Image (cartoon, rainbow, N blue to C red; front, side):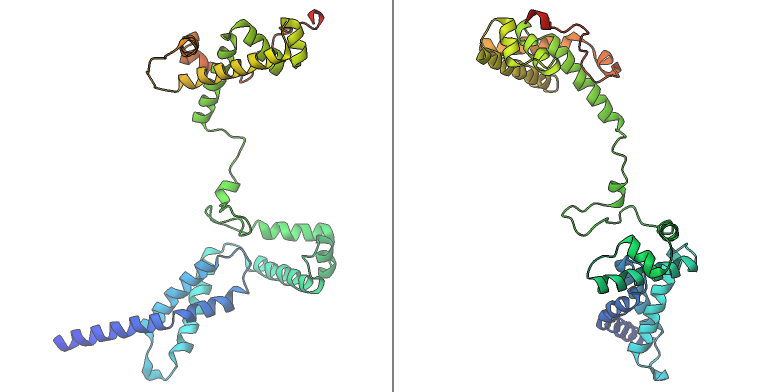
Length: 297
């Protein structure tokens, strides 16, 4: 019994050593087989299938038959790869033949022309019309099945996967939609709560298209004062809105800080969260009659 155990351990060690020694054979077979498959077929998946074929070959190999292990394993590796591809492929054989025909034609023209061939050149080489070639390519593309984590390009610094490319950018997550509504509601209220002159400058400059010169004439001040009012208003808007999302309870020091804190408090109490989130429009309500009438300038 003990002798059988030692023989089993020895046999297992021999199998493991054979597998490790012939791992480069898997890469070699994958390289040979992969040239017959379309580009979208994952070479790493082929290598994994081939490695399983090598393990199976190592277990089944019988040295007494006189067949070299390299030859025996290569057949098993190749068979495992083909079985894996067939199991994952739902397209008919005709489509696969079409894929090889299109790819070989493209490679031939690329080598002859020194560049990627155009659709017209492909159609001419295949002896078909443009419409027919478009139908053939469409049939081929519809047969391709890719995993959602499949990388879309190796030529960019970004590792973009298929699910990221297919993401509907126009579809907003509910949480993001609510955040946007609340932010715009705060902005609208914040503009309304600005001191009168600051509000005139913000609405006139950003919403009504008035120039600094127009605003200066209307308010009876210099253009540099308009610039100062605009900067003060933007700072108030920024600090007032940020305060709504900040949990800092520190008491303000100084006259300006206290004024800004009072402005932030007024903004927080101007409307409740239900009103803010219930506002579907995200724009600012520009009055039909301009705040700063042209006739008064």
